[in-house]
Length: 331
Figure (tube, rainbow, N blue to C red):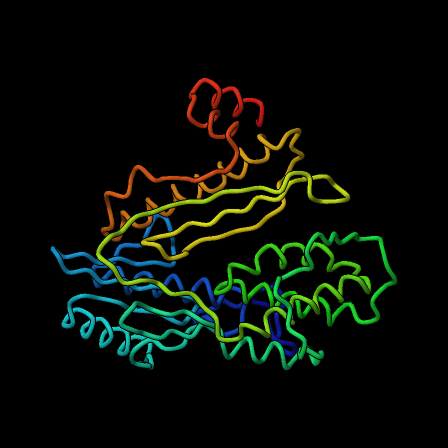
């Protein structure tokens, strides 16, 4: 650190920082490093597939700690271990125990007999109030059907910052609403220079959200555990770049746990090629999920079924010779 003004410093010395101050760029890294060391002294092992997850296993006793900056979620199947961990963390960091999980990073969690419900009801209501738009007329689809947004068509919108803030909030809302992913990724591509038709499309999306304010995700409680993936693509759907859109959904025990809608990085010359890229994306996501679940003791998930509606892509995926040729072409 630089010497404060007024302190004689003819040799150009600097100060040595002995204690990390909250708000500095290096503070979060120092905090996480210290937290990792304290968890490791308690027998936790940092996950190799998710560095924010810490696992402690002793026989049939399992304890998990999920860390986000200075917020920690703890779950366990043996109470004495978790009591000792919370006491240790409290003596080290002076933590505040908020009890059973009900709210975390804008996500509301409810336990029912059918499973766990994840929703963003409070955040959704605040988003709709922040928009200040007339949402009395509900929409049945996230975007108008067969409606293409062009970046250069229409008059410039008078308040680009307002458009960007709404899209950013909608992006956070996709954590509990998979049906918004395609609409949000489409609207996000127009943030640099939004036009009047773009804000109209955004208004349509908000009218759709207003009709399902409390809707969320149910993580079903059941004995049968399986992992299933669905992939699809919209070939050459971008009107300017002619790139395709990758879309996939992964279900764990019949509940959605991972989803994405993203424009592909390169152009596909056929619908089969676009579908193959989408199937490769969901295969990559499933590979990561299998490794992560195996770390916490959920095994025997393979082979994982992936569903695709393109016969040519399915044939390519089943034939190792075709798959090798396609991968070399994609490289």
